[in-house]
Length: 75
Length: 174
Image (cartoon, rainbow over all chains, first blue to last red):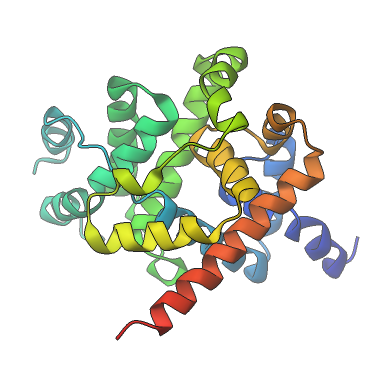
């Protein structure tokens, strides 16, 4: 399969990959492709950035959570 | 973070902890589980700061992506698909999920609302089920009784629409 073909096949999956919504086999094949493809990798980063806007809603974390993390890192 | 300053991690938690916990909680629906996942995500950043590459995106987006992936793995392995589908059935029939109401920070809220309003109802449903429900696009297709390819396209077109809406909103800022 040529690199261009891979782009075509993989491009179709990048947005669902960014949302962790692919089947495990597909996710593994996209992850493999991303290791050598800057273009697709950039697309995924951008889709994640967009998803992070949707995720901006927040519920207050329990107060003990930072205390627990801080105790591990010595903060 | 590169030099492993606890204060840098504390600052990252202060800025992003709420959104990160909020995402984990939405996917897992358990405070206790969500707290464990968020702890894992922050400790990963602490132990392996080089995995975050600022050239590739924001720290917020990185933490959310890490957290999401951990939360989805956990929910898929711990909770049966039937139970999860039952829980999210309401979104499948009517997309009554008002994200905007839950956003506390005003600027973030504005961006989230812009992004959400840009989506068509079908795109919003597909993205909500995939991203917050932790379902694969194949499962989403099943729930919405639509072809798998349609759901994949909706996720893609929805995110692309979000990008255009946010770009326009940024350009129109005073």
